[in-house]
Amino acid sequence: MKMAAVYLFAARGYHGTSIRDIARLAGLTNAGVYHFVDSKEGLLVEIMTEGQELLQRVTEASRAAVAEPEDKLAHLVGTLVGAHGKNRMLSFVTDWEIRSLAPGSPAHETIRAMRKGYESLWEEVIAAGVARGRKSPPDQTQFAQHVHGGERLVPPRRAQRLGRDRPRARRPRPRGPGSKP
Image (cartoon, rainbow, N blue to C red; front, side, top):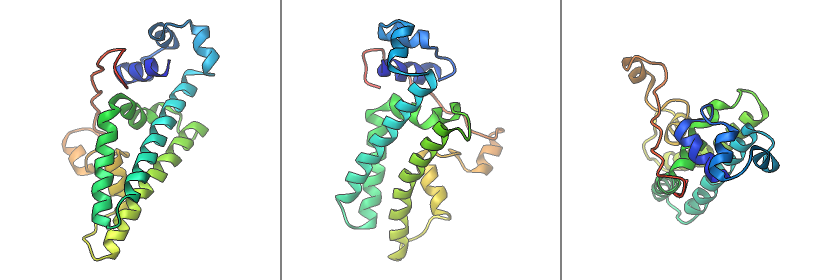
């Protein structure tokens, strides 16, 4: 059922997907879906939580494997790219559908806190490199958010040149119901 939801959320977006759509793709009834989850938002939060926990877990393991800040940064980048490549649709839903959660709601704040925890891993590595005399990005927190797909994907001035406040995301093309999210 979660695979069906990830597929549909990635293909159609959270608001473009109904419980009926998820049930149909998963081979369940609407009541069958509600046996496992309380609401569509609850299902989205479960999916996003699992995606964020997976990314956090593999990132912490990768970071612990090396000692030098430069090597840690390389491992962080590799882990992020690898996780997004291996779990394309799950990563897309985890990164982008936070906009579908009501700002300030417990679900939104939970996911934001998880993201902050992930971003702090980047900030620690960057700070360690700076402390050893390496070059510093203008704002370590902004850099960590940017790499993780934070609030903006391009610098504000470039977004203004593009004529919009927030760059649009491209949805990954779903491969089909049998493919991994």
